[in-house]
Amino acid sequence: MSSTVISNIATLVTNDPSLRDDSPLGLVRDAAVVIEGDRVVWTGESRKAPATDNRVDAGGRAVLPGFVDSHSHLVFAGDRTEEFNARMSGRAYGAGGIRTTVAATRAAADAELEANLVRLLDEALRQGTTTFETKSGYGLTVEDEARALRLAARHTDEVTYLGAHVVAPEYAEDPAGYVALVTGEMLDACAPHARWIDVFCEEGAFDGDQARAILTAGKARGLHPRVHANQLSYGPGVRLAVELDAASADHCTHLTDADVDALAGGNTVATLLPGAEFSTRAEWPDARRLLDAGVTVALSTDCNPGSSFTSSVPFCVALAVRDMGMTPDEAVRAATAGGAAALRRDDIGRLAPGAYADLTLLDAPSHVHLAYRPGVPLVAGVWRRGVRRV
Ligand SMILES: [Zn+2]
Image (cartoon, rainbow, N blue to C red; front, side):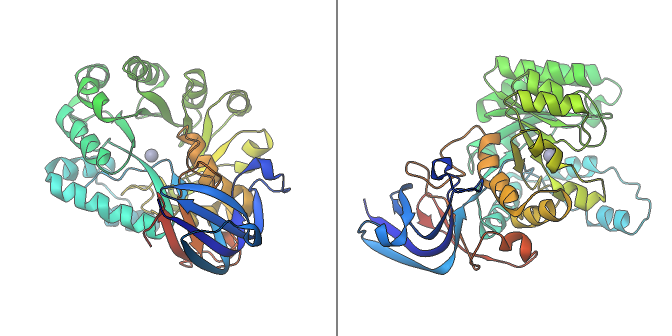
């Protein structure tokens, strides 16, 4: 197995707490990383690096773990430019939001859906994302939900069954019937292709009792829960997520003190998705409040064609620092180790011996530039599983 050292790294983000470096990031200056096969085998000061077969000169720039985007919706067809344009222009827009995407997705051929997925994954990789989670939720029939998960599973291990995105249009008058489908025949068809089950717990989507029934049915089939919770209004989603030991409660924009206490006392990560607030001109989630309470926070894109059509984790880092009270260190940690925690993974999101060699080289001397230079394409190199991809 050949080995490679990446040396002359001005700032290395390891997320390795054993370094005790006064930051949440386990920073090493004048650093090197050694990769063997698909794994990291050594990190430390450049001058102490062991001999290797190959050498890459980082040129005095920064290296960090590849971003872990733990929340996206990438299996879809169609376009919602007009809806965004109308919203940002203060005009009413009549067409049906998510139902527009459902209709286009159902009508699309497998090859079209997969080509769109691959295009978005390449776009994310070029911006430093090396792991992503993605969901169904634009099919809302047994066949279309299972198809979305089959296509997603060709490209990631982190696949989420979201039949409970909204009630399918065919069941508009019979939401209980749709919940029975989601927890019955649809679950049977989807469970073999997914690791996770998710539900949009919100007024107009699924209430607390429905969400509990859906997540409990998924758990009984071996799927682990995660929840779209407290995005548009206060509600039971976050506390339900903690109670059911969900890996993550996602959005967390409208939280009571009891919600924050529940997150602080449980094992559920709060995943913040500022692209959604940006793209809908909504109130920002308060990351500072969560961090000060001791909650583990992740930052992800929520990439989807309606409410957050960005695949850029660096963009989300910049928003989190500017508008959500996070320090640059906290935001970078949330986008790497935080995302890994939201997927209950310890083999990604950090650069330490044994972890996957998923890393991003920035055209900047420090990770702080991700927020300091917003909108600038700083990613100069990406390794995934030890192979240079960018
Ligand atoms: Zn989402």
